[in-house]
Length: 279
Image (tube, rainbow, N blue to C red; front, side, top):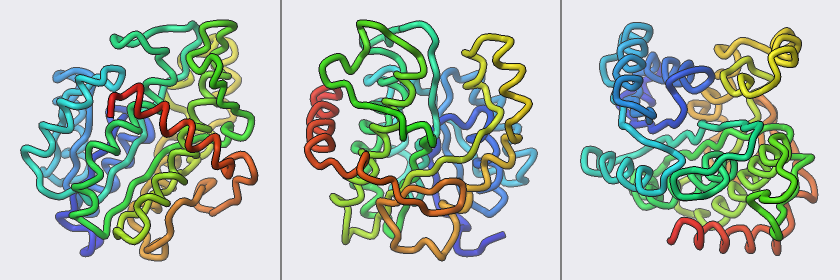
């Protein structure tokens, strides 16, 4: 057990399966208090019991949250803040890949809403607590596919010509841009913000693909336990103290190039995000 992590508080989204689940278990084993979001209370209770059983740490709590609903995200953060005065690690892990264009309860294209806007809103609502808890860390789970993404401001919800993979890569590029902008805004506060590509991991997100494609894709993918390793590294490694605004491919820091250094695009995206989430 890492004594420096003992009794630290981590909030993680998407921990009911896959990478998020194994990250929660790994941090709980290190003595971290785990709070995670779940779509239903039943799912949350089941996952909570599994994390406690595997980690031996009873300090685990689920908060019901629909990440496709701004009202639900706000309620989730309010519940968290009513119970905890500190937050040391925020892991924005949840993501979807949707083949057919679908809207959330707020009437927003689902991929953009869950993969990006939910991260923006939750991080902003918890920002002050993260600052008060410093040193603290924000970890955004992205994908290497952001490199082929494009922020389509003229049709960001892809009402015309929707393609699931394009919506996904756009959302992950937005997440990388958000990481850099947030890191700049939080400079000097003791809060670091980084994003990580965990590798090609066999998780439920692949379920949206064609069954035949699923079969062949899964053959080349790593197990979720291995996919959690980079997240645990970013959450726990002391070698990363003070490092912020970086992109990691697994555990290796890499340059994202020109695509995430366009100030005009970053500022335009930030303004749009605030308008969507009404902040």
